[in-house]
Length: 228
Image 1: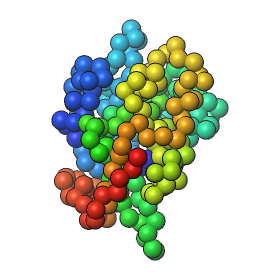
Image 2: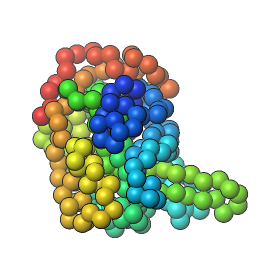
Image 3: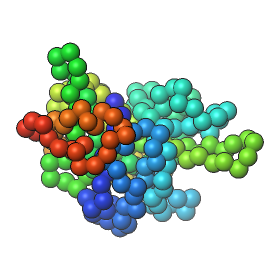
Image 4: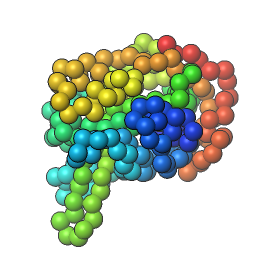
């Protein structure tokens, strides 16, 4: 599961400069919820990497209209290759979502405790995604949108949830984008793992409201937990 993102300026620009030699153009937000615009990395028609702003909630190209009736902000890796909504995108339109970190809510007593999951030392995270382009049949509206691919949580991540986004190392990200990559190689990336040491930082329920923004979204309310 991945239902909220954190995207901040300097770390992600450094990460993308290292990966493809371009800075992150934004938008930047410390509490990004599904349906918001997020910058993703994909390959252009000529095969060169490009950064593109997209809606975080995939609308398949064959859909009659954009809708949030179905949960399309995450896609299970186990069914990605056969889902009518995602299989074409998995074959032809893979992308990488650069983020500073993401939020997850763990059950605690009778409620849920939010955690901010982020790298302990690295500049940011690269999440596997797939994207699509929808054209309106009645006007010139075009929507490019994406979903984040999830897998079963590795042992360290089960502290907060039984699912996790597919997180990629820089080398794995390049493989994920490679249009010539074998499907077996791509599916191997879905094995639950952490590409680097992470930290789960308990934060306040302030972040649970997507309208709340700013540094308070990552202020700790308890000691961080190392995930590795």
